[in-house]
Image (cartoon, rainbow, N blue to C red; front, side):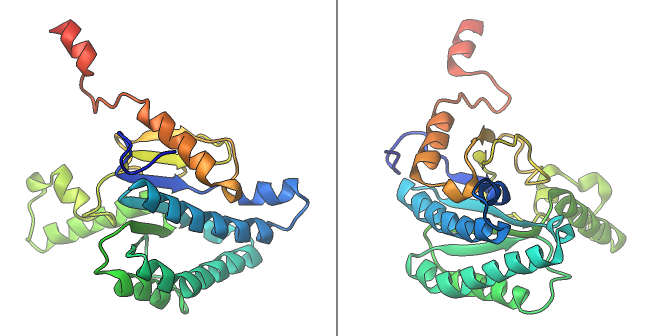
Length: 247
């Protein structure tokens, strides 16, 4: 069993939760059932992350491209998000979980944005696991919005173009103040980022699991963490053993 005392437990884990629809299809069930079971997997992932001593958990809940899905499916996904926040917010708050939402908030309609803001505000002083919910999120959109803000600062005379640095750009991203992910997990056997945390994933380790998201639990999380623990993270440099040989 992995725990917070286990060496090499990542500080920040991000997960692309994939396979709800295929999980349901293989069982002859509606896609809505797969999404419902996916929410149950979210609860397990949050609880396990706390048990393992992971400090940050980012979940790709709803991408900016998901709006192109059938209207009924989008409505179902939004309904599940509403129920998750309304049902689980008090329990997450009690567990000292801090919630942060990343993604474009400008065009959100109805009660979704107030619910997300309520979750952030209610838990803002908590000091345990930080749960980052990527909602209406796309990494290219995030980078575009950050670039626009820097351009506006240049136009206003607040910033010179020659003074733009990596830190300056990072400060305009949705994730500013959050460490980059050490480990990115994707379920369902797909092996791509799908416009998720493109900037922040520069030095992340990737683990692709064959199981579908509704089945995610301790066994799959343990597998991903064991794989991560066996990786040699060099961040562009040499490993200690290689450096000794070269030296």
